[in-house]
Length: 338
Image 1: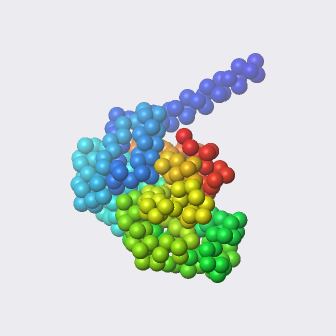
Image 2: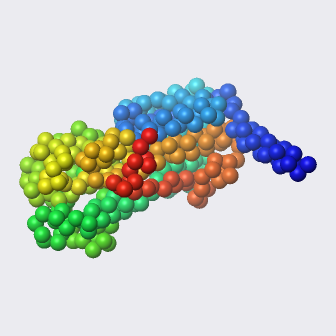
Image 3: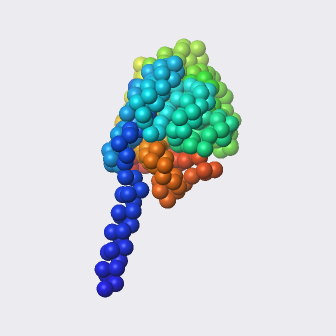
């Protein structure tokens, strides 16, 4: 008899879980700042997979890195009668007018990857943010470099006890770029190293731009003086590696190797690690960011409670879902390859 009671209880729980996400006919409208960003492509795929799993229709569009276009796309979503919005803003400062558009229609809005300012988050009761704390990724990427120098004294080419490095940043004003830059350098200092910045420039998360910037740094300071490269994301790290490879570096000769670290743990980055071209990266969990955003939009769009139990993620201050980063090194990178 007890066996049947347990089975019945399990069935009831399963039915409850499914019913919690019983989809309405109205779609969820989503905007991605640009489709050719590798990380956001992975987030988008996760969103679409979760929407299919939940029986939701996700209408997702490419904002082509143009805020005016995204503004029009949000208007179009609203006109179509979406039940919720998931927005990856082109410009962080545009979050407020986008929030106001949603608020005027009493539509739930979930921001992803680019965090709105605190006052924007406080101005509406149907707003959430899904992302990761950028300072964690900065700390972990700086630690990867520090650990490498501790394990490989020869990485200090000029034997001065300092790390001479290049910093390649994401876009100007993006909180992730600012915090990853700040905390990666702090982590190297906290590990006991003096650091010397040989070059620092913005490449807007873009591989091609990063290749060009790295070529400029090599010309300006000389490749023999560069001991490490930190990039705010993997695309830029891989761009820097292309410039190094053009100089005969990071091609397998241990005497001609400069450690490069990125952030995101994208498939191309993991492939570069398998070839010994990239030292390390930090997992920015695209899957769980995409899953969480769609779960919130689906529930809130159907006027159902958004709780830790209903979405399966911790909620901070009722509005923030922080997905933790994980360091990816030569010891564990294979675990992250799909």
